[in-house]
Image (cartoon, rainbow, N blue to C red; front, side, top):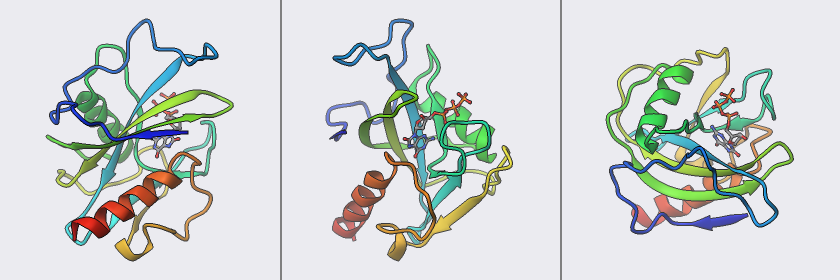
Length: 165
Ligand SMILES: Nc1nc2c([nH]c(=O)n2[C@H]2C[C@H](O)[C@@H](COP(=O)(O)OP(=O)(O)OP(=O)(O)O)O2)c(=O)[nH]1
C-alpha cells in the first residue's frame, strides 16, 4: 500500500484522474481512480456506509464514493457519487489523502476528500446502511468489517484531527 499526501494539487479538485488510457502498475494492472468523500460534522463525527449487495466486498463498511468516470473532475465525480449513493449535494471539498491498494478484484487509487458542508440529510439510496462515527471512535470504530484500504484512512484522519484541535 502506498500513502501520499496530495501536495501541490489544486484544492479545487479540478483535475481529471481517469483517462481512456489508465495508468498501469509495474505488473501491468490498470489503476482504477476512485473519488471518496468523508462527510464530517462540526462535532467531527464522520459518515460510513455499508457496501451494497452485488459489489465486491459487499457488507464491508466504507466511505461514500465510487469510480471516477473518464472526463470527470474529482469534484464532479464526488458530487455525482454522493448524490447517487446518499442523496446529498455538495459544492466543495478539500483533498485529504491519496491511497493506493491492490485488491484481488482491482488495483485502486483512492482520492480521499473532506466534505464539511452539504445539502440534504444522508440517506442510503442503494439500500445500504449508514452510520455516523463519533470522533472518539474514529481510530477504531466498532463497525465490522471495514474495507482494508479504508482502515488506514481512519487512522490518518484521527491523527489529523488530533493535531488540528
Ligand atoms: N467508495 C469507497 N470505495 C473504496 C473505499 N475503500 C476502498 O478500498 N474502496 C474501493 C472499493 C472499490 O474497489 C473501489 C470503489 O469502487 P465501487 O465499486 O464502489 O465504485 P462504483 O460505486 O463506481 O461502482 P460500480 O459503478 O462499479 O457499481 O474503491 C472507501 O472508503 N470508499
